[in-house]
Amino acid sequence: MDDKQKVKQAINGLYKFAGINTQFNGDVNKQVAEVFGELLKEINTCSDAFSWVPRPTGGKATISWVATNMSKRVLEQFSDKQSYTCARVREAQYQRRLQLAGLGI
Image (cartoon, rainbow, N blue to C red; front, side):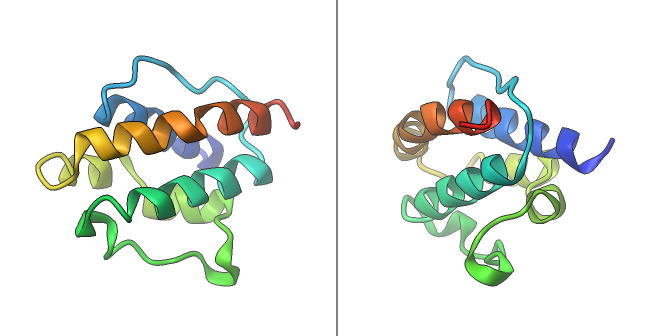
């Protein structure tokens, strides 16, 4: 599996975790990685469960950073610690931005 596939898996895993019945089918590009990184930063405000995930160097997430730091296994570890409601709200706020980024807009 290449890094772009891992990013899609991470995005879709986070949607599933929050109970959002959708799939990210856009193109994984630099903009998608940055928006997803912002989403993760926002979700970190819901709980300290994400606090151990390292911050991206340079302040913006890259495809490689997401692929390395947000595997499906990592997301599964948050299931008992994370606030579902808070995560769901944050993800809903970023869902459209991710779609547009995946279209290169």
